[in-house]
Length: 285
Image (cartoon, rainbow, N blue to C red):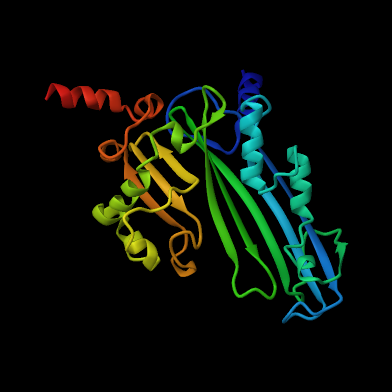
């Protein structure tokens, strides 16, 4: 009996980093992580740190097990995660990330990387770092990879960060784009209306750049989050897309039943948010 329990426990560890909100079949992902630390020597000063700085690059990622996604979907996830359209495999993209110098060479500097054998940088050095992480949440038939990065470069006015969302149909292994859920022709107008009319988006209302505060539509962003449990779609704007850096990343909540009054949903969209039943009830009333 003890062996059986231990075997079950070991098997459950194969599915780390994917948290399920509803009872359903497992969506298998694995946890991958690595880190590299360097001393960077420059032929010019890294203002204000002198000619020597530290560099730390790392990642901690939830990544789909082999065969979970279609090849096309895994390729798109690779590009979205690493921002690298040149690499064709995870290991290649990860290696490129670990050895990134974050633009110093693009500024005409000549630099030399000395890789450290330890995983820490001396406290006396100012250092640049880049960290990439992702988690996975499963909600109904949708798995969402939440990809976050944080970058701080010596000499820059401030750091930068992002939060991307990639939604996957766990039954088909394909990525769900927002156009798969609805006709997006007038989605920009609906998003702007949601900012103006829905109290849940009040903070966004006060942060918009003037050009968007006075516009009758907002751009449709690439990033969005599906929550079929609470019947919402949340569209996400990265730094500077619609608001200043000080306001951070902006999220606009769109309740599905409210949104369906403004844009037509596809069959998939209606299924995910149970809108067909809602339509039937509305007709009956």
